[in-house]
Image (cartoon, rainbow, N blue to C red; front, side, top):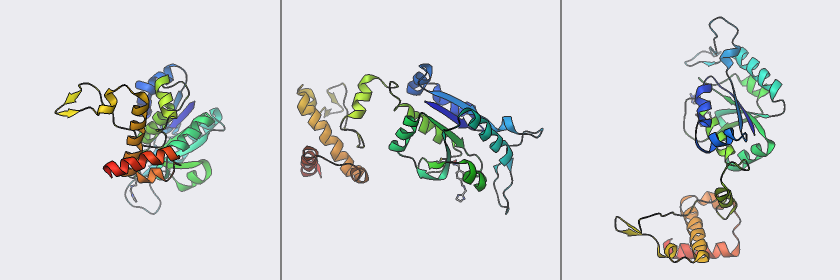
Length: 244
Ligand code: 21W
């Protein structure tokens, strides 16, 4: 997968390939990350990248010319990629949208700074506008890094076999079950009996019931997007009768 990021803070964005799953994917050549800094395309001797908003008021916008020239340069390398502007006004990005982008094989992220960019640049150059959630962060970089991390996990071969199998299993679109490790008793609390008996079918059922139940309790909105088969409906009913 190829990801191009237009950013005034390339060193921040590049930190995402510095460790863990994303770092390994980059080392293996599964992910190629390129950063483009509008400051490198600024034409004045001060390399100005901000400009004042028409209509006045506090705050600056990203200067149009350096941004436009940067976009043009990226487009010469990555002609057909979707250009995504990360902004608080964007649609909320979800796992399935990120998966689509991985299937396409490329994406260009435009990270806003200051109060954002000129609306006409959005009209003319931007294919989609994404937000990562209802909180205010200082620019698009962390949002781009979140998307890059989430997309990398979906690149075939980027996760271990174990984990990719897990993703295909019942847990898709649901919250995870509870997990336990040693010791068998911690601060007076025992590990659930079912996990100690070695009956894998029973354990699988229990975990799926936990997943369904916790999703029902904490994120009922997620259940509206999933079709439960008869067995899952029975497990959820058991959970509700026990804990609901
Ligand atoms: C935050 C720029 C707020 C401008 C209402 C009216 C990218 C982001 C960002 C930022 C403002 C994302 C105002 C979730 C985010 C991002 C920087 C507007 C004044 N508010 N996803 N006027 N949250 N944020 N401030 O913040 O660039 S994706």
